Length: 449
Image (cartoon, rainbow, N blue to C red; front, side, top):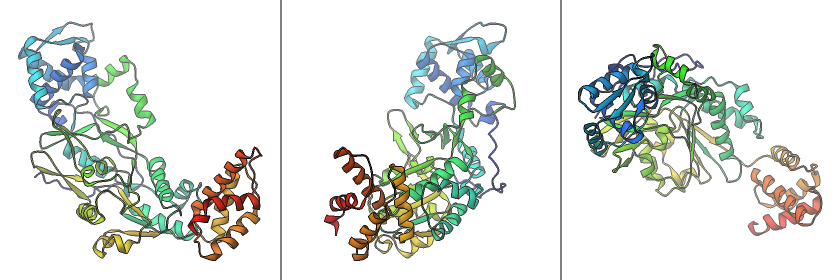
């Protein structure tokens, strides 16, 4: 097992993580000459002949690093070189020989990965701690801006703030329909928009295996990262030839926000291995490092709460996780994210004291008091183009909420959207009055009372 030092590093709170520097040599890449040579063979086999410029760009490595492997492959008679213009070997075209094609086919049998060169696991670990969620500068003003679209009581806001600052685990619970998911998503949006940008590798190496990490469906690239990779050939040549530039094996992204619900199962928390291609894809909680991982509707997953909690005991306690390769080898990765559990089930029926002890923050989302309910109701009415109607709210309390039905924040949306549907069906302008609310409530609430 590869044991890595996983201590948090001492970084300035609120400082942006520095971009990893491009390697100056093959040794600094953390890759062997044989590994990089095989990557070049596979790349040329799938893409055909390539200029040195394009080959370096595809591998996301400086040309002088790639050149070392190209010289080796030329000496081994695996590639042939066609001359280029005056700017040197970066403009030469490299083609596979017959021997090179056979070697490429052999390399494919060992691993079919083609793409940016991976970074060493140690580099990924160090960079992850450089940009841990605990380093985000959280102020009441900045967090309140992320919640501006929600009506949140001061007590609840003051409970959420320290949870976000801590960067630890959060357990959100309470009756359904009162904004648990919306609040968790708002925390995620705060991290995504105000938490700064982070660097993640396309892939990393662990125990000789490639694990892909960057996921276009999850990670949102920073605008300046996209612009950097759309540069013209002249700028690319300067970057690939010069020293002291950014390591292009890393992608600059916004802090990820990953939400999973009832579809979650234990297999989704392990490495995903392709026996055909013989490389791995990182599990979703590893992709969430540096951001937010929300387990919504906790207790309704395909696996039992006990099984899921047992899987999380070590990561929540030690801030590391252990992943297992197909060979049985294990290695450590950081578990550096704001982990959130949200449920409308009774916590006593889901978790034991040992698990709750690992939940640094417990936030209960209760049914809204009337003043909060009225604010939510009126805000949503205005959003739908309706004039607020106090009589409609009074009717709901007299008929339902004062007679045993607990008010839900989601009732405001559901009832008002039902009113809008009634108006459209009756071919009248969208509006709100007591009678329309009576009609909407008869449709939406009646069967639940």
